[in-house]
Every structure is written in structure tokens, then in C-alpha cells.
Image 1 (cartoon, rainbow, N blue to C red):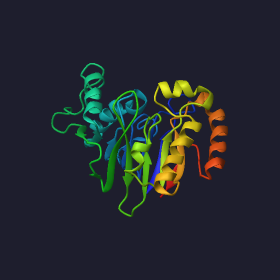
Image 2: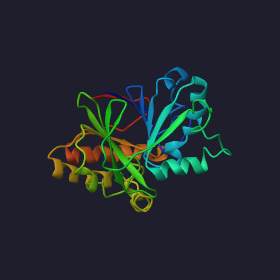
Image 3: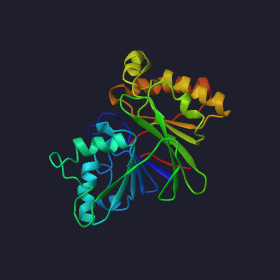
Image 4: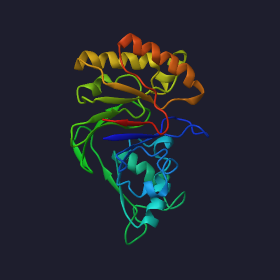
Length: 256
């Protein structure tokens, strides 16, 4: 299983893209940089998209995916909780901001929305997908994704403290985890349901206590204006936990 980081940040600029991962060229996780990060030929290979929640930096390219896929004359399955899919239908694909690509083109709609329930194992394009609720400002989930050969990773999406409720349900070899702000902005991180390096370290210590091991850790959803500071603090957490922590960057590729 190869995982490509299309977008690793919460702010878009010339050097940073919004949140999106791509698994084996066919399964996307969040869609903040799904069209801006892929060529048209690469977009044609995408079969399905998993959405963690409805915030803009995670769903921004859904509209563009719908339009581009209509030209490809094919269909992409979009998975998420009902509230996430409903928000996209109401506020983005509403016939005003953009066409409803779950109904357009009429003979073969570009997108099919498929609700996912937390804690129910789902099969998506040959992968086992488990959605697990996480704490954020809107209804949100993280995903554990497992390939047919047993490789697995967990992607937290946006989350604040309290991931211990997830750890009993997942056993990944790799964790992509929200680290949005530096330690000095911890109060702001907690108020907005995000993590800092110090808060992430506490969550990982609880994972280690529950599971008896630490997977490889890839912090993601970084605020680029604080990235140097965050990276320095992550080095301290890595030494403290004896963990392998590698900060996500655009076009990073990892193999499980």
C-alpha cells in the first residue's frame, strides 16, 4: 500500500496545500487538494473518496472532482457520515454554488454519495475501512484503512484531545495525526479541537499504554506559519516517547 500526501496543511499557499491523502492512486481520504494536487490523468484513476467531516479545507475539491469526472464520463463514490454529505449537498453542490453532481449528468451522475456509520467495517475498493468518531467542532471521524495484505494506517482527520476513545478500535502501523498549532497556543488548539505537539504526545502515550507499541507517526494539518516551531517541538516529543515522528509534507510517499 502506497500513501501519497497531496495536502498536509490547513492553509493553502504557493507552498502548502489543503488536506488530502491518496492510497494506491485509487482511494482518496479527504479532498482539500484532490484536483489541485493531481494531473487530469491521475484524477481519472480515483475510484472513491472518504471524507472525515465537512470543513472547507477537507472538502474544497469535491466540486471540482464532480465537474472533471463528468468529462471523464465515469462515477466516483464519496463516503462520509450523513451530516457531512448533507452539508456538501446543501452548501456546495446546491445548484447555486455548483451543480449537484450526484444528479448531473442525468444519464450518469459524476458522484454517488454513500453514508458510512461509525464502527461498522466497510469494504471500499478492496480496502477494509473503519470510521471512528473523533472530537471536533462538527461531526467528524477518523479512518483506519487496511489493505488486503494487512498493511494499515489511521488518519485522525481534525481532532482535539480525547483520542483514547479511538485507540481500543484501531491497531495501525502508521498514524497520521492532527498537529495544527505549537505548544504556546495550546489554549487556542483545545478551544478549536486541534492538537499541539505536547497534546499529541499525551495521546500517543495513551496509545502505547493501551496497545504496547507505538506506530510510525506522521503529524499533519500543520499551520505553515508555525511549522518550524512545531517541527522543533515534535523532535522533543519523539525523543521523549522513543517514537519515529516524521512531519507530513506535500507529495510525501509512504509504503506499508
